[in-house]
Length: 462
Image (tube, rainbow, N blue to C red; front, side):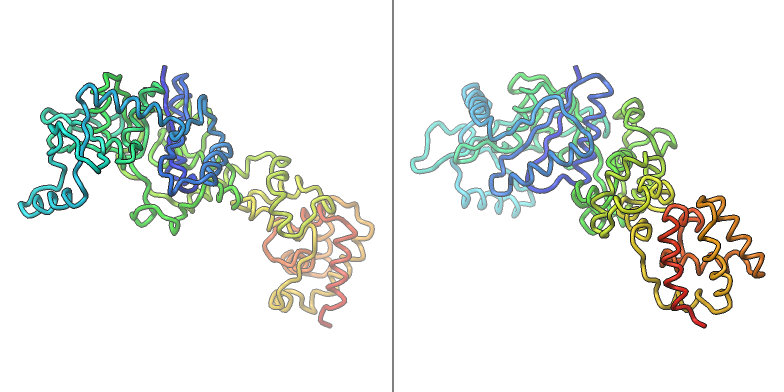
């Protein structure tokens, strides 16, 4: 059975790169009827926080990346790691190293002076006596010859000579195991068949394979995914939009839109741009992942979100947009049906926040900027608007009837549609860019529309 894992460190929020790794691992397990496991690598005690752990849980829940086992915490597995370290020591695959920091630095300086790559030279490999007063680290006894072959499912074949690898520290002087060692034991115990992770971990893979082989453990298949860059080709950072996954929720993005966008960052199925979660799982294969880094494009993400907003159920949009409506001091309970309002507006916006902002004038009047009033509320059009207001008292209140009435007023006063519709927009909405004004009026309602028009007519230039 296919078993994949997502193993974030709780030292910050769940970011775009981590979310994409989780998505690919989740999708591969789902595609092959396997299991997806969540593991929290929390051995960095100084930087790991409960808030970060919760941020990981929240981000995955919002994205809908459900897991079949876990969450497992490495700090709860310390006895197991120490058991395996003792096993390696007993079998001669690991040894105690008593070298001091000064001794190691002197060794590296001597190597640099000779033009050699600084690396541990194995001087404690054959030590048979302890050194009083020194708490030794434990090093893995790396093979001295041969090579590690990685048939990476994304990168292709990668060959690393063991001579390039020094003896990795697998336990610190205080006995706590190191990251690379914990990962190996976890993947072994959890029967991970496919390790899908960022290619910044590729350098760790030969060492991890050597440890697994020393333990007689089966090797997972590896798939190292190229990193995500900013639009300028630099490493992705906050200035490129690489914020917390939950920040996108707070900014009004739909989770399915962000998942769709993340899936297209370095993976493709023909020219398909918009697809469902089920379609993605059906199409996803590791050999379709690009070998080159992907570039994060906030504008493309906004476009994808816009496509999802257009097709979203209006009632769902109402629920999702409530916090944004509240920020705009809009009470959807007093005014037109927000589902109808959002149905009218959703093709014109890119986020839920923009949707709520666009809906404000349906629930409370907005004062038009002085320049707009000066430009559009001109004396020559006032008689037509007064005639329109009088007939709005009795007209059937429907979009069709309102449209016909506005056209009649234009004809009767020898005016073109924009000459009447634009000042009408300014008086009713405070803006010049809105959906068709007859549709807006129909939703706002007769009493409120007349109140706003008359208020402006009282201040209208003579």
